[in-house]
Amino acid sequence: MGIFSLPSLILMTSFVGFSAFALESGVTRGEAVFMTLTIWALPAKMILIGSMVSGAGMAACFLAVTLSSIRMMPMVASIVPDMRTAKTPTWLLLFLSHFVAITAWVYATQNLTKVPREARVAWFAGFGITLTLINTAIVAICYGVVAAFPPLVAGVLFFLTPVYFISSIWASARHSVVKVAFIIGVIGGPLFALIEPEFDILYAGIGGGTLAYLIDRFWFRRKIVPSSTEGEP
Amino acid sequence: MTDAWWAPYLFIALAGWIATDIWRWLGVVAGNKLKEESEALHWVRAVATALVMAVTAKLIVFPTGALSHSPMELRIGAAVIGFIAFLATGQRVIVGVIVPIAVLASGLLILGL
Image (cartoon, rainbow over all chains, first blue to last red; front, side):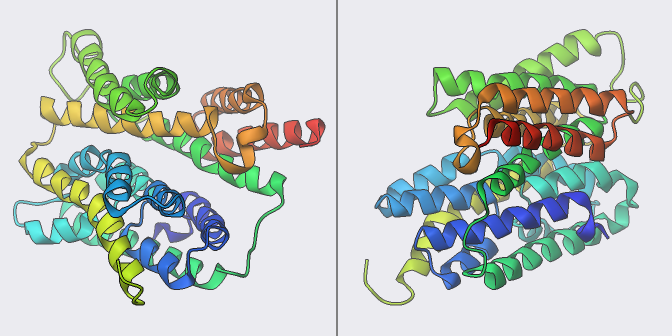
């Protein structure tokens, strides 16, 4: 089981950091635990707390959180075809989709195809639900215990997440289109943040992803029938 | 809003829980229609990857919190050196994590941040 794998351990340190952030922002222990269980994705929780602290109303908080969470849709959509069998009920997939956030998504894209198809739903349920519950427990326990890390430690912990995503997403790319989208996303994210900070992630994601698809389809796969081309890295 | 104990929980459930899960549920609905190895799935993979990498790159280039006062050149340099080391050692994820962390930590120590 991947609970003690590198990505889970990195995520757990991020949640220790989150409990410190929640305490500092005046969010109670119960609310921080509830957020971890119900929202799960770390960026969405940070944005919700940020908006609540600034005194924004319900509608403004909803909008800020929902705009930051649009990426969930293609993330979930891209793993569903690999995960389900013809008999998998939709309600089960709707329930399990709650446990998708970046770390679980990266881990699932990396490992799902190594699991026999009939066992994939159970495999994801085991991994995803355990990961959420462990981190909920971490927030419950660490709230108030860890006030704040020294700046150097906090900086290093913050840096773990992006550098982990960079190497693991590249290493797990089974399709050339993922590598093209990787490069365009890395450049497009910061670029659009300068040009159009309100909707930068959307432009970089939908625009950049579409560009990546077209480059891949009409350049890297121009002569070939899809699949059977690139091997495991 | 009332001052009842459950008021903040209701707030979180509506502005947080529903606001995120709605996209996950739409993802299931869309993903159920996608066939494996279809062109549509290739496009969805491209969009998902570009979105995640845009978020990731922004964490390095425009970080919040502890790293927001560190030099941008150090953060980008550490990430680039780490990625080169990762590619040069046969794409080992552990190398891609430890090398940039070591470069960043040494840089922060040398600069006394």
